[in-house]
Image 1: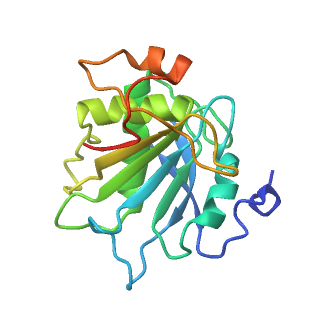
Image 2: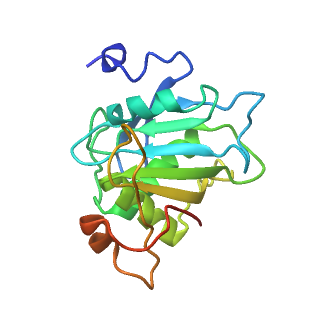
Length: 196
């Protein structure tokens, strides 16, 4: 399906990208680079929106209308979903999350410090964000291209997609209930956004 038919991306500030990753997946995504007035910083981190199962990045179309038009974004199709090709290695949450961060790091301009990002996930995307945040994961460094990679500063786990109001899932820490119990029931704790 052409990008202009998706409805999400009639925003002229979003760029389409295909990125080859080490896991063998070609990740398709939309990127809104930071503007000069809002560079990526701790005040304006890059939002990474991860969709759920069996969806694509199209689910974020309503949320895009609520975000400032200059806010930096990365909205990929997870490997094996939408226009991204499946991973040729494992399909576990950490490997998929690392592939997303690897794709993002190749698209961003080189910076002297790690790029601060906020992971926003729904359903499977929330589980991937949770796994990355627990392990403070960074994509593998490439010897021919030394650079700082994106670093998760916070994450938001969505129980339902925002329509009228935003309902957020609580974040599980390792000493609390396992993530599968929280996402199944949606009732545990009080946190909606936690710094990593």
